[in-house]
Length: 400
Image (cartoon, rainbow, N blue to C red; front, top):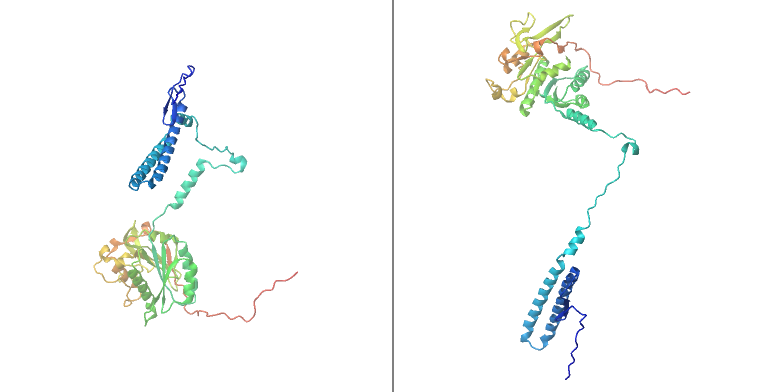
């Protein structure tokens, strides 16, 4: 067989080498051509692997023994070429990095400046305004810790009961909280008293004394004992003050009561019955130290402490924590109905303190009268149960 040899032209200076079915140039002036050759080689290798995989599948019909080995070799080669092609495709090249780095992909949206004064017509708040408001807000949040005042008021059904309770309730509403008003009635809690207490808006407790009494004069004693028992059982913390509903009190009294540590006392002005003169009863103080007593000649020798029932207050913890206050006995502190009239105050105080050294005179120097004990009760008035109207009092306005 004849063979024909064809010589190359001398003008063709680049020699080409064949390897398989791929040809490439030895002298490549462009870096992009090399990158394209890498991608084409990976694709060609992948196509060769696929063809061999197909050829391996077709060869399984010739030999059962060589079927398993050819199948395994085909799968391994396919996976190998796939992995190599995948990594070659994911590998970044120099010109791609240069192109990406030459561009700025940062996005920043800058809205145009708007003048609120012109657009809305509202003055823009300054920094000083926020500072002033923050100071005012902090002042409103300042909490002043105050002792609770526990006001004990015995009451009973009489002509001016509603007037007295409403007047005392309106006064207690002006006292800064915390304040607890304990109102005690005899036998049953009346609906009128309960409604009056609800309308005051105060924190209150409506108690009932179920004591069977043989003497009406001892009514207030047992009502106060009911309140003391309630305070002791529930361990209410505060300053206990016995405030009858028919007396008159000033707001300064309740502010000074909160300053009491153990037992405090002050002078009380008393309007003597059937006489146009007032008596002063209570302590004589040197600063806050009690050094003597204001009293009248009749009770000067008999009474130990010359104090009115509305002229003292004490810490409620003395009732339910005797160890803290070093009381000699743990017997409950109560008022006694076996003593004579006018001696209820001194016998009760003797259970709370030992002498004047454990007392605090308020205000400083005991120079102000903060409450009055008035004897203005009209005992002969009958409490009206209802009003009977003979005629219709509806008013018809005149027409023009």
